[in-house]
Length: 240
Image 1 (cartoon, rainbow, N blue to C red):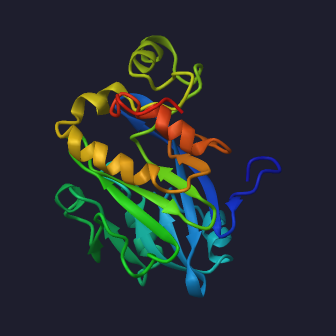
Image 2: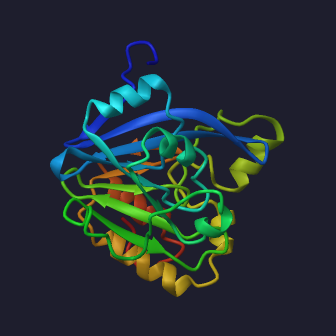
């Protein structure tokens, strides 16, 4: 707990956020964030699990049974093994590319363009394909109207990085005034038609809140933020 701030911050009905420890990637500090979604029967889906401290585990267990561990892309997997050891009955879901990257992990099923029966009533999903860096699964929690992005949308405070890293982050649009798709991800889209189709499906959801692994939630105005961030991919779409 950070002062009086709870470990799990309610975002809406049956959805909570938890901030984890920072991760170092190529010398850059990244904050980490997990979402906990309560499904029917008080079964819990953990999106992008962060390090399971004893206090966080206790807070999550108080909400229900930890049933699903979801890595939303092949970059967000660092704490999966810790949760697997703590909750061996939970099912672990692999995004495209992660089985090959982490042969040491055991996965129970794969994530794709269609939400599995285990959470299709409460959560929809879309695979954003065509990117050389990663295929990201974007999720939509229906009752709270929350869309969850992992790395395709980022929004760091201008002072988060320092020195030459601050300059790189600015050029990469990581510290732009609004959430943006970092330039490195834009350049890695080799199949923009596939990506555009996925974004159109996402924008068909009745989004109110935008959650990012690397950025503060946007609510209200989540849908407009997603539209604005992908305007480079949808040149003929009207501005939000």
